[in-house]
Length: 160
Image 1: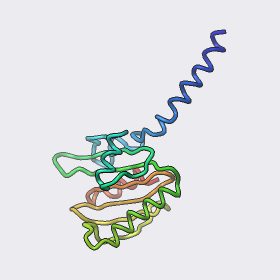
Image 2 (image 1 turned 135 degrees about the vertical axis):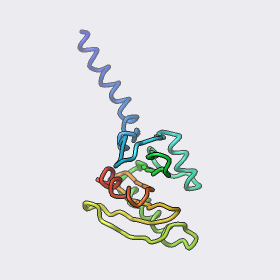
Image 3 (image 1 turned 60 degrees about the horizontal axis):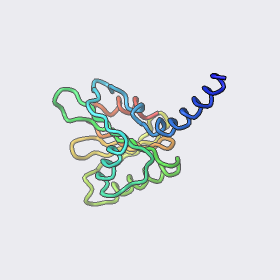
């Protein structure tokens, strides 16, 4: 009798927890990348508020996370990732960002390039003293800002 009651309870708990676990993107952001350690992790509503503030408007995302990585007193590298409704929406949002960065004459981002990282299209810009990498993978939209020497380690760690 106990077992018969326990199984439905476990199924219910897992069903209720699954959406929350799917929206926790912290597992995508490793503790270290190259020689850099993760020094800050923002998830949930706080991360979405930061994404919206950065863009100056509310963006449609199911979940967001931001991680900052540093070594010593240097400028931190940043990783921003958002899960959106579908792969098509991730492609649309990535394309829109890249287009606006490329076409806006007042944009602080320059030297646009498209590169291939293990079959993944990555858009690369420079500006504000860092390299900026943008791509989408499945229903995830990624943005990495890092020093030139940290680009490869971040791509190897995140762009899969």
